[in-house]
Amino acid sequence: MKKLQTTLLVIGGGPAGYVCGIRAAQLGVPTILVEGERLGGTCLNIGCIPSKALIHAAEEFERAKHFANHSPLGIKASAPTIDVAQTVKWKDGIVQRLTGGVGTLLKKHGAQVIEGWATVIDGKTVEVKTGQDVVRIECQHLVIATGSVPSELSFMPFGGDVISSTQALSPRELPKRLVVVGAGYIGLELGMAYRKLGCEVAVVEATQRVLPAYDEELTRPVLAALKKQGVVLHLGCSVQGMAETGKRLRVRSSQADEFSLPADQVLVAVGRKPRTEGFGLEKLQLDMAGRAIKVDDQCRASMRDVWAIGDVSGEPMLAHRGMAQGEMVAEIVAGKRRRFAPASIPAVCFTDPEVVVSGLSPTQAQEAGVEVITGTFPFLANGRAMTLESTDGFVRVVARKDNHLIVGWQAVGRSVSELGAAFSQSLEMGATLEDIGHTIHAHPTLGEAVQESALRALGHALHI
Ligand SMILES: Cc1cc2nc3c(=O)[nH]c(=O)nc-3n(C[C@H](O)[C@H](O)[C@H](O)COP(=O)(O)OP(=O)(O)OC[C@H]3O[C@@H](n4cnc5c(N)ncnc54)[C@H](O)[C@@H]3O)c2cc1C
Image 1 (tube, rainbow, N blue to C red):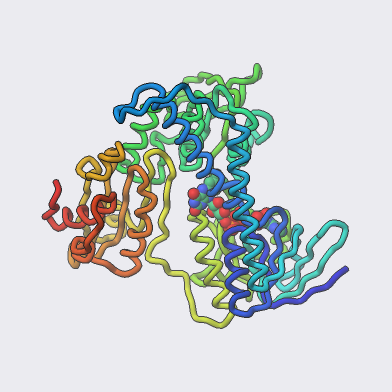
Image 2 (cartoon, protein in one colour; image 1 turned 45 degrees about the vertical axis):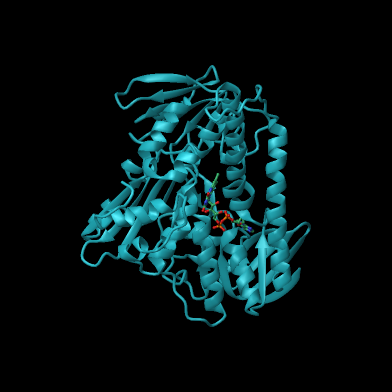
């Protein structure tokens, strides 16, 4: 058995783990990162990046189809077709470039990468099976960054026609009829993309709303778009299992009526759970917070010098949260004083229209006992949105009533994900409505709606 010693050992090479590895190595901390599958983790291989690639391809295809019908812009095109195998190849090319880049960055900064599945022996020792060999690694600091896995429905496990987002991102061919279980962001992003690619798509959701984690006003334009696109919604319904005859999904409505939906494939997107099993973690007897490892505001677990970052440390399970935690832990191990106290962790749904939130919604502010004022500016009154043929949606700002400190932003509309940077910067920097209202925003841009929403909250919007 080969033996290695290091200061920092990271299990998992997803965005949380690889960022931790890069930053620690940059700071001169001897670092080993163990990855069992592929560097980049869920995010780069089967999550954020491939889903956005597929969404983009579906949008382009839909645009081409739109031109083949009727375009007010005067553009004419003949009936387009799509070669899905080529689309997947193109998507895989992007994934390969990015995951290869992660390996290069870790190497460049001096972190050692070991390929293989790690098993925890104790809080300072891990064994890794690499091919026929076993490597035993001793460390001072152990970082658990093992991510998450898709949740299964116990009565309808993944396999055959029942797929997770992972299979949905690499279709060999498109199903004629896809049923999506779960109207959260992953289900809707992929459901909308499949619809644009030409599939018949139905969505079954247990609650009465799409995107139930977001406030209703924000999700209304998404609901309208789903209906316009011809996605059939079964809200307040629960899935019972596949019919014995196959190719049909049994569903029960909130009134307890049972019916079945035709389904060549069923995409189960009912959430993800932290990956805490199967690698000896239980030996550490760490305190848990539900299914996630419980951490403090420095991502320390309940055992000394054991850390947990990214999805394995709980919600919100987002790549940028994991990266920020990874960077922070590396700096603490290197001797810097840090703690995880972001003013906000933005979240985006890459549906059509997109949704972005940062900080508190009006309801969340109310629940926190903060008296707020809000300002909403619709894209209908924004020149740039008109030139993009995308006037659905709005920007909303939430600010304290007493001193106008901004506590939250929400937007829904085309390309609003890009406004997330401005939203989070204003929150981190403690901007007030006056700060944003008096900042010159370039014309014509969607960003002008950000300025106008702040002015509207102050009672003097200029363009509405
Ligand atoms: C379809 C989809 C779309 C998404 N879109 C977005 C998005 O747009 N924006 C966003 O912010 N987030 C998105 N996410 C979520 C995002 O992918 C995760 O939040 C992020 O990848 C979590 O990073 P992580 O490093 O904690 O874990 P992961 O990325 O899951 O990485 C964990 C790594 O650890 C490795 N590992 C686990 N156990 C061991 C072991 N014992 N030994 C060695 N290696 C091990 C795994 O192989 C994996 O590579 C999406 C997820 C999905 C599924």
